[in-house]
Length: 324
Length: 271
Image (tube, rainbow over all chains, first blue to last red; front, side):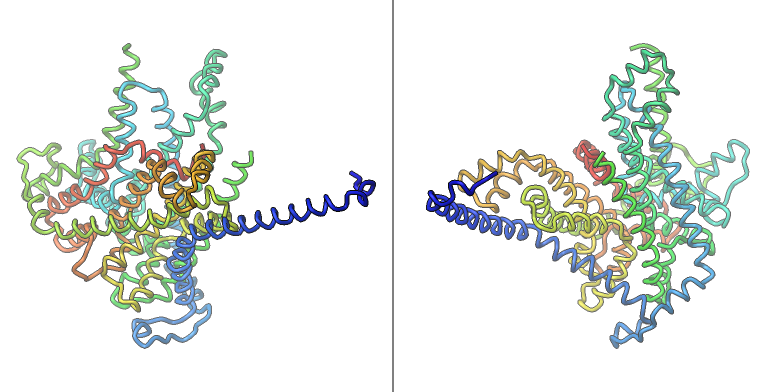
């Protein structure tokens, strides 16, 4: 584009136009700034909230973990700086290894079963039969009940002497199992309850994933003579991969946080047989008459690091799915 | 209807029955007499039913239920107040740094509650907020606010721009547009967020147990917990309280099932 030819002759008009443009731009910029102010005014409460109720507690938690806090520290207000000593003592603690292993087992086994059962049920309910909508709604109940309620119910069902589960086993001639009180079974018991609670979430998400697959894909496959099994592994499952990835990662993050169920059912015991990192942190901070907030905070921060790693993976996966 | 469909429905009913058995068992035990509690094998249906458990609930647990209602309502109000404007801004006003905020909200959801509880405890002990309704409302709202912003943003970004433009041409400012145009059409999002904020606050045990232990103002989850700890014999009362504590979830599920499904999927599926 050339502008030099007419530059001298009609110098006045472009100048006026430029001035007008500048004014317009100024107005535009002012309006943009005003709009930015308005936009920020609307999010300011949440930002202030995040700072006060997320950032500050997190900061307090880190602060706790690098000092030696005792009950007296809350009164006197001073706790000596300890650096990474709390972390070192947590890592050296004989409970650390079992807690880490239990956390991993709890998370992975929960997710595997919740996902597999949830997906199978989603495929089942996708067939649209009489009552399917109603029954699918009922399936949501375990997920909506207060965790404390579910955990109490399972506690009594798994009771060694009077539980209905052992009564059922007895009917089949199987010897009673000390579900909650034997170190071999306590982790399995809390796993059963947690899988039960997580199935609805997986069912609902995988079901909505299935619904987003166009029906003619299945019809075409059926016409081509693919069996139900083939259709699932060759079409449904690959098409569900994005939803599956998100569901699994959300599952990881939620399961890592599970506290209520284990605490109500076993309190992490017997001994450390069902202690996860979340339970261990609670035991340090609130589980005894002599709270050790610094160790609790250190364990909590280890848990955060693990959660954040999964969170970053989640965000990456989500972003790459949004792009594709 | 052919035989094959009946088979499928039958299987569906059976699966649902298996899935809901623990819920049924809770109701069954809540109606069982203490003398039959340790019977072997247990009664599968509540023959010889008793309402002792429920009368215990009425005599001992009403204040707890009241606290839970109060804290739940407060959590809903606070969550809506914070999340709706933020969702509107993120969806429609394009604030600078909005992307960072969304990212931080996503991260905030990943923080284990036990860590939050510890942080709150050390802060509350200084501010004197332990065992207060406000303390619980603030703590419980942290479960719901990031989720609420997420839902409102997703929902409000689907509101057509013309609607907002029309309001602007009519001379409405941003606040007015938000209050009289955006909020009324966002009813579904408001219901979904309120529903989950209430349920989560109602179900909260960890914050209640760490930040509200010992006061007179205790929610229903602590009522059940105290029962479990104190008298291991009175399982009908424990389970009756559990049944009563499950009522809000069940009522909400019946009244607002599609909002529940919407809330569950909102976090995971983009549509």
